[in-house]
Length: 162
Image (cartoon, rainbow, N blue to C red; front, side):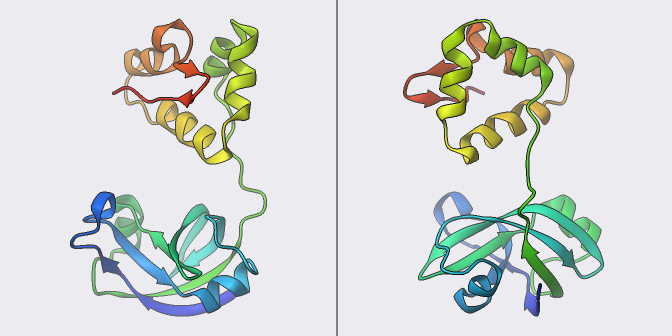
């Protein structure tokens, strides 16, 4: 486990990341968590006194990463841009998102659906599952899970339609 202090930063103008709050994880520290890794990986530990698990690192090039701090996490920390935080981090080797039963049933309707879903990169599977799990109403969840009765599976991959 590594330990360091950092400042919460915010992207003013950075394409899709504009407005994101984050903590910068330099290559040297990232390398201590997961040696020679240049792709996103999950971490667990503490930011100040708040326990975290399954938080994704986002590669920024040259071996550097950021940890995006969503609003709910910043609220728990009671901190915003410019505030200092103390981090205790290690790789979360046990991170897993469980497939919702309703999605599993939908994918089981046709043999190729589950196969196509499981061929997707883990990050895409997790994104799609999280999209379903974050639906605020049962109507939205049902719509999200069974879009077009084929769960929106295409040979080119899953596509999200909002």
